[in-house]
Length: 260
Image 1 (tube, rainbow, N blue to C red):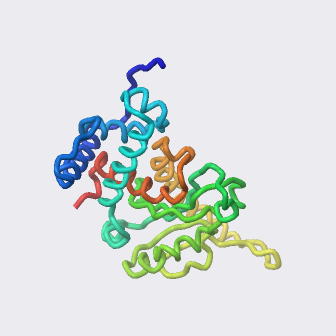
Image 2 (tube, rainbow, N blue to C red):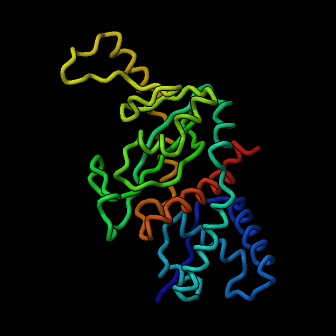
Image 3 (tube, one colour):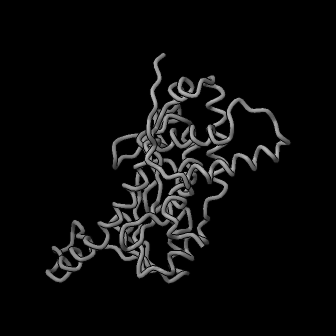
């Protein structure tokens, strides 16, 4: 099989952070022999997460077996995911914002044996539902654990306790019509109902202003999906949460905006 060098659009901060985690893990295991050094394992994980390189391609490039790649990737992702901020830490950052933007996105997955819970009627495909929180500039602040794609955005936000947390932290939050009924500090646009009159001119003006503010949240979702592994998950959908958390940690290492 032919191999060639390739680039990963990340800084050395991500490589250094993950390498340190892997080295600490190996020391905790009392210096167990490994096929690759810690830095090579970290590089492999970054190539998988950022570029979406498959296990077969990574096995050929790093000259190890596919089983070894699978073990190394799982270990690296779990180490990163363990460092991810929880909802409490996310609310501390969100409380410093003028307002936040809440939106949901679907992470496509391969079809699984139990398909019904993962089929999204809105997107007409199988996937995992992830709730994304952005700042007023559209920068990624936090992303939730993954739920089956059939779960509605409002239900997902309530399941994660996101609505109550935003309200308790007094964070003004803009969301789309899918979050109608969230109440608290979450603001949604006016929605025309079937048996009600059309929206007034004032309501339409409010909706336009709301849309201008909320649209910036799409940048956070786009930022999350620049990690090509999320183009389509080809692993167990229950691994989606660990992968998203690992990406959040690496994104924080890249931006270093919300650290502290």
